[in-house]
Each structure stands twice: as structure tokens, then as C-alpha cells.
Length: 326
Image 1 (cartoon, rainbow, N blue to C red):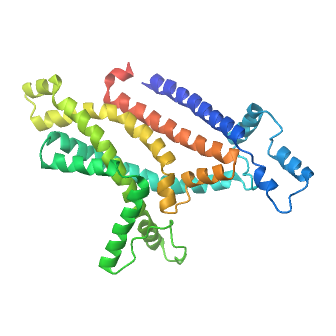
Image 2 (cartoon, rainbow, N blue to C red):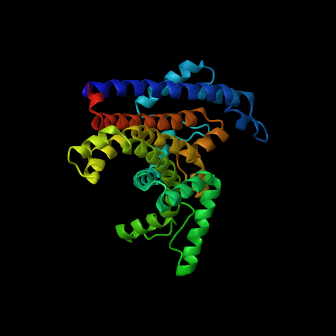
Image 3 (cartoon, rainbow, N blue to C red):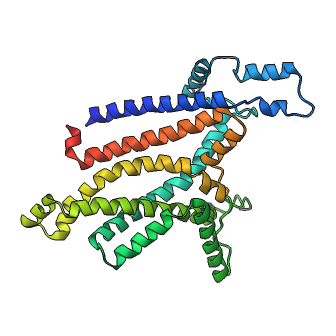
């Protein structure tokens, strides 16, 4: 099993480098980082523009620029933005924002999605199955740009009904909290701003995973090995949890893993709606600024998330399916 996981980790690292190089190359070809400088009024001297071009290494071939940038990354230096800000300092703040938002959302979404999917399969064509199916289809058919404002309206209605403003849905914190208020007040402050965007993410995750889990569970419920386990004396419940659920979770492991990477990329809409300045919002800003270093850094972050998620999915596969360990 150890050798299998090491081989998979090496493969993912290679894919990570390739994905980052492609992003760096495409953005280098498409972007013109000096365009903002040329638009200054009055326009700067040609010598100033040339000096900036040399400073950004635009006078070098793309592979050389990528190797220079990659060497800095290995030493913890992700370069500078086109506005001369250090990317490394901004990176960790943005990573913290995105992870706070997405990790909680996808964890709750996966847990509830699996539970609802299993319950729908067990109660196939009964009331709960119809309700969960309707809920999933409605949520899946609703774009995040519509779902987010709807959740905001519900939160506002709750605030109005309770006569408070406890639920907040713009930004990550108010910035007015007394620094000496203590950890409990700080936790309450963060929680008030976290609930509404997290609910928006959780709804989509539940709808997505419950549909796949229901199908995987239905395949298992009609399988011979489950009937054999019951014929050998196991109760239906014991056979279901000991053999059925474990088998049905195997194909879901890949979805769980790569779903997180896709969520980080697609989460730009959620971050924009709720004004969270995470990696998604930074990617949009980097594209607007035609900043190759920012684009490559965000791509590398997403690739590392997918790498870690994929590696964890391999661990889950190996734990759930003994054949993988051979």
C-alpha cells in the first residue's frame, strides 16, 4: 500500500507542475502587464517602460521565466504582482480566507449529501425519496448567482423576525470588534459572517453528492453479495452497514476528492456575492491586472488542493477496497 501511495503522489506532483506551466504559458502569451503602465496620463518615458519590462523578466523566453519563478517558489518566494506587491504575503491571507469558507462547506455538504443519498436509496419511490429528488433538481438547476442572493433574503427575513442583525452576509468580519473582547466574542464575530455563505455552498454540495450516492447505493442494494451476507445470518441492517455502505462509498471517493478543487475554482462567484477576498476573487483580480505571477500562483494552489484531495481519495480507496493494496 505504501508503494502504491508513493507512486500516486509522484504522478500528482508531475501533473501539478504541468498544470502550473500551462497556466503560466497561456497567461504570458495572453497578458500584457505593461498596458496599465502605458495608460498613465501623462504616459511614462520609454526608458521607464523598458525598465519595468526587464524587472518583470518579460525580455526572457517563457520557459526561462517559468524556471526563474519556479525556483523562487521552491524557496517560498512567489514573486511580485504587476503593482510591486509581494505575492507571498498576500497568498497566505487569501488561502486562509478560502479554506475557512470552503473546507467547512464541503465537509458538511459531503456528510449530509451521503446521508440523504443513502436514505433516498433505502426509501426508493417513497415520500422522502421524492422530496430529496425535488430538492436536488431545484438546487442543481439554480445558478450560484441566483442561489446566493436567495439565501441572503432568507437570512434577512430571519434577522427581521428575530429583531436582530446576528446573521451577516457581506465580508468576513465587521472590523469593529474590541481586540480585548476575548476568543468567544471573536468566534461569535466570525461565525455570524460565515453561516450564510457556508449554507449557500452546503446546499449545492448536498444536491450534487446525494444524487450520486443514491445511484451508487441502489446498485449495491440489488447486488448478490449483500443477499449472500443476509443468507449467512446477518440482519439486513448489519449487512447494509458492514458491506453495502462501504462498497457504495468506493466510487464516491474520487468525487469527494476532486470536488474540492472544482469548488475552489468555481467558488469565485460565492466569494464575489458575499465579498470574501479569497483565492477565487484574487484570480479574477489577477486576470484583470493581466498578472501572470498571480494567475500561476492561484493555479498552483488549486493544483495542490486537487493533488492532496486526489491522494486522500487514493488512501480512502486503499482502505475501502483491499484489491487496491495488491
